[in-house]
Image (cartoon, rainbow, N blue to C red; front, side):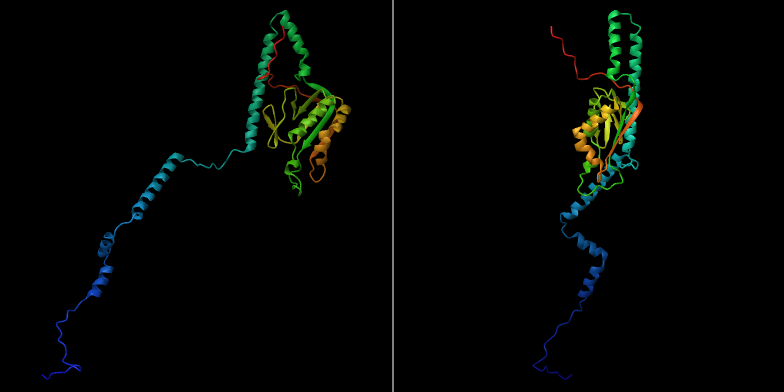
Length: 285
């Protein structure tokens, strides 16, 4: 066989060549699931791979604990108790207590009347004489009806007007009471409740509380006494003429109505008369 010469010299000797399938093996190793899992499992595990399962486990435990604490009940009731409902409930409880007090007072008077004692009888007679001035008896006669109310609810608060100016405050009500007393009133009621020397007028929000019972506006006073004297006293009240009457005109429009009545009746006070803090001072020897 003729010898073939290499262009630059004799052809180099070549050993037997091995056929390799390394690229194919590498491709197969990437695709085989078992080898893929083995490769992943040989990788060093970092901290996050251990923490994440613990976090999800703790969250599941908290959700289970919360569900057990709720005991299957709705934590947000769909029908919350309304403020008006609470007011009605409280008013009913107070009225029931007033009725109980009236019954107990009647029982005491009935039992006391059966006792025969000169000193006791004299004290009873004196107490009976003081029932009228103390407000424990009905009073009828001519007088006034005075009505105060907030600005109309459908009225927008005008620009530049303080929102506090469109509602009636307790100092407004007290000014009316002071003027009526100074004008010669013999008996005064507010919202049908007789006012006596221990009555306090207190505003809570947009309501007035008398003897523990809340009332909403309009606020209606009825006073038995000389109409001319009480009208004059209302007109001479510095507070009313400066701090209330001017706000009865636009743009505020508070309500101020005064009616002269030929005859009206102010009911007797029927609440408790006990003093919780006041004491009669000891007489000097």
